[in-house]
Image (cartoon, rainbow, N blue to C red; front, side, top):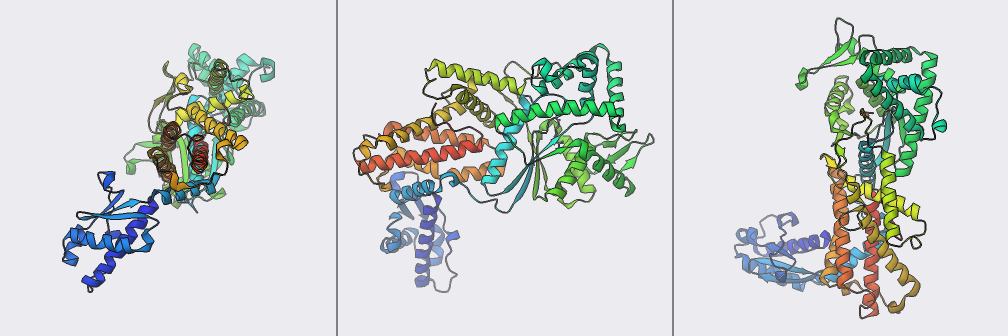
Length: 590
Ligand code: ARG
């Protein structure tokens, strides 16, 4: 949409330039950039306006006089015919845009582009590695992970849509004290049990062990802690029995977590494992120690001094030489750059780890990696349920699977209440997609930095600014198109003629559709999918208005009916493309 305005700016500049050649031959040429582009206060005065004040001195003429000459030159220029009409308004040259040309350009671009429509190409050639989800293998995914997963997957899709090469990675934090806590509880309280014997999802069994450990550590805090530490030492020393249990329980955790990823449409190009990278981290820390980048305390532990970044100090290796969370992240980052050199590595991780990433990036820079400047923490806020805070330690964690199941059941009820079971085909499949649409749209609607409350009931509402409402819009348009393709009644002989789309509602809708690439750029630049969710809502409102004000079948002429139908098809394309970016499944029927 912006293009035709730019065309006008170019033509105005060209007219000014020919005026300059006549009036001020010694002055430098007029360039398009020196012509400002404004929007007149009243559309009756024109769609775009170009003030002539800046040229008064140059031409030694009054601005209205210049405007009159430029307007005349433009009116005589055959190039302006397809772009609209021009008029002098006081010191301004104003243009009325040719709606037909604009409508034709926009409609044509969308219908020809299809799945590709809206790709701005702004990040072509850029290699972005993005880490998200990154669970610990001591429990299933919870509501916080669902926000993380939605954000990571959505930002990945948006950056890819902008033309970047995107590599999605995950770090499975599969070692360390928290894993040993689940293992300890298993040995003490669940020995011999399996997911099969319990009839539960495999990651849930591991999670139940973790909850049981919390209880145990409340009863006997010192004993529990000592026993868990003992297991950790055994693990690092390679004790076969400990390693065996570790493998089994990690297998359970990962298998269950992978099922949830599959269900929610989240995927990764590569999984990293802390157990593979922490030793590399240790080596690099010892190298840094030799070079004097880090220092050893009397008890043998290794530290980094953070005074240069106005922080305290951070331990990198414990006194017994065992690794910490930071240790493995150093190794993981180095391994990643070796595997897939990137222009940027983005970590999607909660804002409670801001300190951790600040320190991590500093350490990597101190170690001399020039790519340390390309590391970025995409930090996001907490997500709670209306009832209050979720806390895993108390065992009241909001399990991700449970939440999606509840949403699915709610959607199923809604389908039944509306008597749509037959119409939708497979109600449970459709209900699952509505649940994901509700979940993802609600989570992504809030800018990442903000804390939020996930309201399951609101998210599922079929009206208002929700995922299901957009899915309903998409299904409605699909049904209109289906009917027409089958019957074609009033379209007989109709031809597409975008110049017929002159109704305000059509015009506004087209402008919104033409805005899609800009919104994608904005979402990509800010790493904020909420630009897309707001945009989707605009599109659906625009369509509602159009559908209400501009009858398709009773348009009055076959050409207009056919053209409006194509406009509806264009809306469907944009909805589909945008919904895909925010992980809201498109539904043909609902
Ligand atoms: N597994 C960690 C946790 O649950 C998050 C990992 C974030 N990523 C990283 N590279 N440190 O807290």
